[in-house]
Image (cartoon, rainbow, N blue to C red):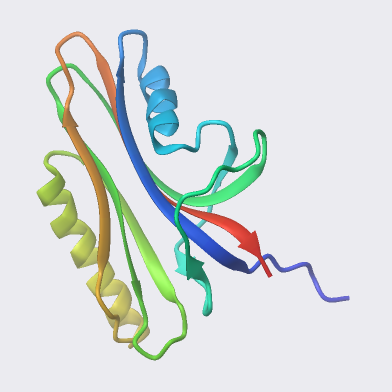
Length: 160
């Protein structure tokens, strides 16, 4: 018997950020809402974009759907600067691509530099040349007395 394989055929990228007076969990929920993925049951997956997988514009996904994604999140409290993001690139040989996620207390520029280093190492350990690296980074300074959250995600939508 061949085991079931879910090979993503399509994906989109999204991001969001938000604050809450109540808690960092509520800020996370609001950030998911800002990104358009708050009504799904998100399942974190690692970082491979299959060969032939197509990037699409964000779509609405049915409420409650189990949704696979590469998700980065960073939560914090008043006056902190936080960042969350992803970087992704395709192999030059056409054999798919990879995603790196990251988060930190600090600027979006600092995170972008860190994500670029991660992608370069992913390329080196695979002995594969990557094309252009694409970044999706959210950052914010959280207002005093509030909780904040930044997220970025690559969301798989269809399978072959």
